[in-house]
Image (cartoon, rainbow, N blue to C red; front, side, top):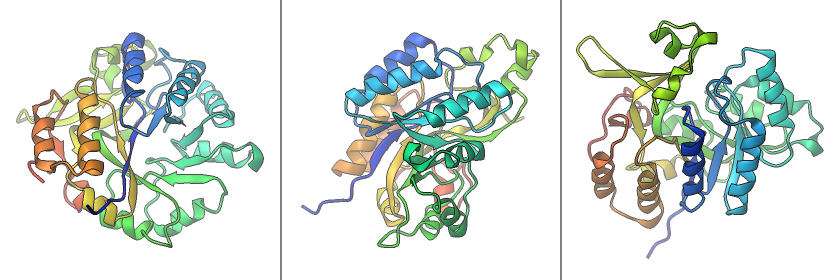
Amino acid sequence: MTSIQPINLTVAPLQYWWPRQQLTQFYADLAEGPAETVVLGEVTCSRRNEFSLSDWLALGRDLQACGKAVRLATMPLLMSEAELRTLRRSVEQDEFEIEAGDAAALQVWSRLPQAQRMPMVLGQHLNIYSASALQEHLQEPGISAWVPPLELSLDAIAHINPPGPEHSVPTEVFGFGRMPLAFSARCFTARHHRLNKDQCEFRCRDDADGLLLRTGEGKPFLALNGIATQSASVQCLIAHGPDLRRAGVTRLRLSPCSQGFAEVLRQFEAVLNHGACANAALEQLHSLPLPGALVHGFAQRQPGMQELVHA
């Protein structure tokens, strides 16, 4: 039996605001799951204070004790001095790898003495769209991986960071979940409820997978998640194992959803790393109460809303 290059699974940072008990149980379940890496931290809105930075660090230690690699993510949009202070504390901690949500995290990190830097992952919102841009970032010692922008196709990713001996740094691709497409200083969830951002009543707690928007014809279009605008559909690259490997992808990133995520992890692990049938796995995924239709267009240079029906 021919062995295949494993694709390690990464659980992306939670995009939504879940109650503390639900969030704690979710990560307790992950400790026994197949994901190799878990990314922690608030990546949407600092008003979501169910978990403080100290809480995330404590959770990271628990997961690390269970054998998981832990990464601490920073926010993609900073709008206050308090958020900048949290960013500095996140980057300056000395326990876990860091994922840069924006250029500010890179700047704080690059000013630290090299001996004090934790490894840094170039996050998906850094707008790295060329080999030269990637190589410029890699001039700083300590970069450990690159997460390409969501809309890049797999062949474009392979061109930017070619597989083989010249492979610069591991590539981690967003392989499952509602895609965060844009961020704004305005909170769209608060606006939807006719509230001010600073008096939002924390309405996003009511939307465990974001607030669905439909077109005039009633078709799912986008999802609102605080300051983030997401796809209504769910990116799913479970049928693209050979394409991922040809592109040099060694890590696949799965973004949490409120229902069925443990089964999603199991199906991705079975297909990508144990040779299970992709079509059978897709049937199982379609049967789950996922928040949207499964799509895979961006990976193929197609519109992102192109649905995934079969492998």
